[in-house]
Structure formats: structure tokens, C-alpha cells
Length: 253
Image 1 (tube, helix red, strand yellow):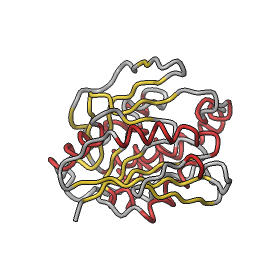
Image 2 (spheres, rainbow, N blue to C red; image 1 turned 90 degrees about the vertical axis):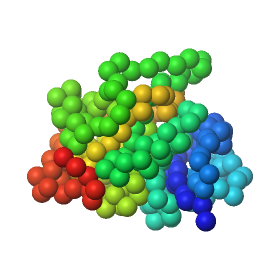
Image 3 (spheres, helix red, strand yellow; image 1 turned 45 degrees about the vertical axis):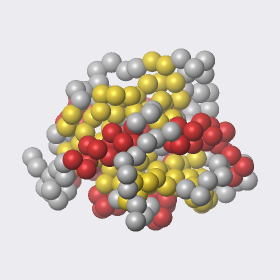
Image 4 (cartoon, rainbow, N blue to C red; image 1 turned 60 degrees about the vertical axis):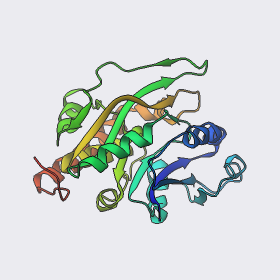
């Protein structure tokens, strides 16, 4: 029987039109012999506007649920994640060639590494791309390295949570994504970094689409009071995990 990587995608109606591009990027992934992927697409809502955009492929499962934001949709999808690993793929983003194989290789090679991230390029409407300054070096990310950088750089992590690849058992143990209106993926990333080592691939792993309907581009996302509250609870969770000395089995300090 093949071993499986579960791709988890939260989608709402405005971003459904990008699923075809995400699918093409997933189809182009090449995995080692004995491995396969399965794509769980979870609509954040119960409209009739997403289903027509879901590709026809036996490796895809589409479900709906009452709206609660992308973190809730992804966490609900975990109920059906029957693979050893989970890869995040937002509906409006695209995987770079080789991304899944590189993530898998990093975690299969070292049991002390529990999650992986990779370099990101912004993808603009005209097809152009742009990178980010300050990517970390290729290789392991030590425990608390992302958390400490984030706390000292105005709540900006040096790795992108939209590229996350993680061991499913650890993801479930931490409760999935945080119950926040935004930054739920950052909260998960910092929690993971509090309890285990990670990995950063210097090769591009994701094309992060910039478009007019993007949730992170809306005014509410940068509301000062809400942002401070989100950051406070994100940090409190990560620091508490460290304080109680909870560690992923096999991790090292």
C-alpha cells in the first residue's frame, strides 16, 4: 500500500476560481516510489459557488461546512486526513515543481525534524514574481528560532506558514490551526517551533498569489487592536508550550 501525503486546502467562494491553477501545480509534483498524495478541499461555507471549480480527480475529496475562517476549515479537514504527512496549499497559491518531494525527503531523513517550510515568491496578476529578503539558510531550524525572530521583528517570521509540511500526528496533538480570524497559520507555526525542530528549503516551494480579493490584503487584517490581540495569544500559546517543556518525541534541544 502506498504511503500518503494529505494536501489540505481551505477555500471560500471568491478564491474558488484559482483551484484549477493549484491543481495543475499539484499534478506536476513527482514523489518517490511508494508515495501518493490526496487533496482535501474544504469549503469555508456551504455555497454552491465552489463545487463547480473542484477538479474531477479520484485523488480529490471536496467537503463543505459552516463558515468559521480558513483555520476552522483546515482543522475540520483533519478529520479525513489519513496520511502520515499534511501539506498546506491555499486555494489561491501554487506549489513550485519538486516542493512535495523536497519536504518529504527532509522529514524522512531525520526524525528530529517534524515540519518543513520553503522559500516563497509572490505571484502578481501580470505573472511576474518577487522574492523576500532575509530568508534563513538552507537546512534545519532549531527549536524556538522562528518564535524568537518573530517576537523581535514586529511579529514577522523568517519562514512562511503557507508553505508548511508537517507530521500529521504532531499537527493533531497541537489541535490544528488556531481559532483566530487571521494569523491562525502563524500560531500553528510558532507552536510547532516551540516543541520541535523544523527545516527550511532555500529552493522555491510556493508561488503566493497577490490579488484584489485576498483576505490578508483587507483593512480588517491590519486593524491595530485586533492584530495586537492575535499576536498576544499566538505568543502566549507558544511560550506556554515551551514553559511546560512539552516536546515532540524524537526532538532535541
